[in-house]
Image (cartoon, rainbow, N blue to C red; front, side, top):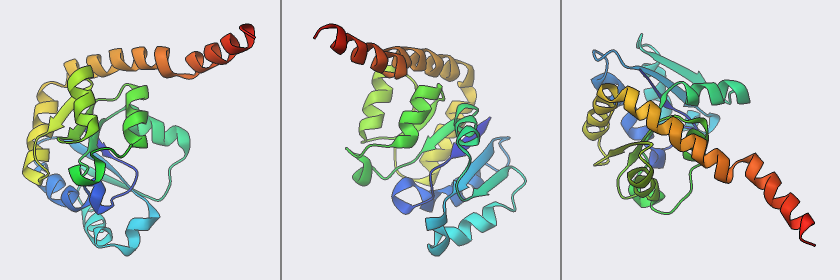
Length: 180
């Protein structure tokens, strides 16, 4: 199983937890894909990310990915969204939305709107506490439940693309022109 952590490693996105999570998962067979955007180079997370790149089960991508590579990284993984609940109780997440549309299972922090949605839709699991230990527990659960998680996330993605995707947008615009 590959766990992706994309979009940057800022503290409010769980960047401070990722080094401990990777270390604690080193013997579990889980692989990590971590995208460190340029803004993290100046922060304390940069040194931790450099150390992570030394682990054989970790691929660190510095900087921006090409769009297709970014989408493939999300679609082929379980997406880790260990966001700090105070920062993301109501704040939107493009990474979550992309995972939703691409049919990738997500691991989201409790006490966020994403956790409420995951409870309702079933497209992932909830990290109960904002701690490395809780993230690791959630990753281990995802590993055990991976086939069911992938199937649920794919089903949700199909529904979301039908109701919110490009096709729905085009139909709505065409319908507006037809009704005038």
